Amino acid sequence: ALRIGAVPVLISIAQKKEKVRDFVLASGAKILVTSESLAAEAQLAAEITHLIMVEENHPYTKVGKLRSSYPLVAADCEPHDPAFILYTSGTTTGEQKGAVLSHGNVVSNVYATNHHTGMTSQDVGVCFLPLFHCFGQNFVMNSIFNAGATMVLHRRFELMEVLESIRKNRVSIFYSIPPNYRMLHKLPDFEAEYLRPIRYFFTAADTMPVEVAQNWRQRFGKIIHEGWGLTETSPFATYNHDYHYRDGSVGTPIENVEVRIVGEDGVFCQAGDIGEIAVRGPNVFSGYYNDPEATASAIRHGWFYTGDIGYLDEDGYLFVVDRKNDRLKVHGFSVWPREIEKCLRAYFGARLNDIGVIGVPDEARGQMPYAFAVKGDAALSEEEIIQACKEKLGG
Image (spheres, rainbow, N blue to C red):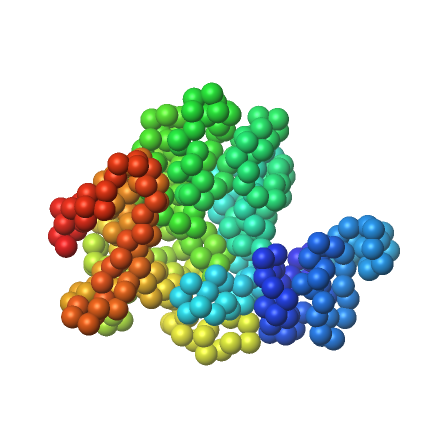
């Protein structure tokens, strides 16, 4: 689609029929490419003029037939021309918006990814991340294709299936999200051996617990490289470099990208001060499709206001604290759920499998944080967690 100048609108396979219809109507899509297993969710209104199936055993138009019947003529696209419409996760407002990424956005991010991963045509990358998401689509798939490398594709992360695939296909680059690394770093030695030949590990899309990153370095002698960004930044914006890796940080801005922290007064913050993370550079999207109001709110004076809260240290390393709209107000003070989660994970280590913190309305205090914990140690008590909060968080 990119080569002929068409604009793909990538939609999660988990979306129901009503939501798919909303995306089709909002984007103006005319052609739907899907699979037979999803056809029931793809019966849409008359706006869809062509329905194309990827399988061969049905009466609809087949992808293979299109390849052989129609010559593909490359379009002469400009850097500012739209390349993709990717729907955001909707974590800030609950509404998913269609972020328009240009050809310039895609190309700049792909080359930055190839540079920082050191990818060559000899590499083999394993991908089980969803390709309708910018992480799987641009950071993984497009960068692999651009380098002439090989991609081993899985529908989902099934532990033993992926480990066996790593061995069989001689995977050299591994991309995943922090929850999967939390699982992998607990593997017994005989299963962990599957991971040792991999030369490069990368993570994004969530906070990597410091203790997992440190344990990984001790066990495998290799860094889990961490990056940060959003759909609107194509997605790569910062990178924790191997030559000066900093625990707990998502790194420094990639080439030609600027990151600033903006206070509630709209002024750039000093090092160490917490505020909203703003990004400027060739990776920043052109806007939300057919939504000028949301675009004007997000992009101001050339800066994209991400909705993420964080701070820069004295050396320019970025630390992400939380989402702006996740902030709790307790007695008028800002409390960040992710900071509580990070603190308790570090304190209890393997005794705590996972934890989530939410805010609950409180008449006296405004809000109160409530933690929901999944115990790794059956003996871990509620009283221990409360005491840890008092010791480490001053609550």
